[in-house]
Length: 160
Image (cartoon, rainbow, N blue to C red; front, top):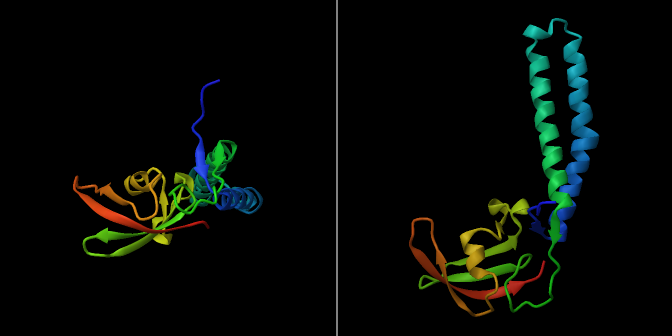
């Protein structure tokens, strides 16, 4: 058997995936089945846009279900070490940019639960890769997409 990609994630992220899967299976899937049934009742399927749209939606839902089931099967739950001196997946990290002092706060999570708009960055992102394994008060160089880099100082590490 080939090695499956593992998806590191927090317990919270794992539980959210389980909830999303449950909603897809118990709410979204039955809704789209009903839409297909109603669209079929309109008659000729060859020119039935409601039927086509419902079948497309069904395909997307089934893809999502398969994707989430795969991620759950291959989830690697990251346990909190309790050590708030080292950056790791699941930790919320506060750092300041040097020299301007701009403060930023991010929780480092697995790619499956990343949500930059809510301050959750993937462990695979350049900034997280630079921070993971570093310690409180460390100064770290972080590569930027344009090839430049910034220097940051870790000022706080917290468990969630």
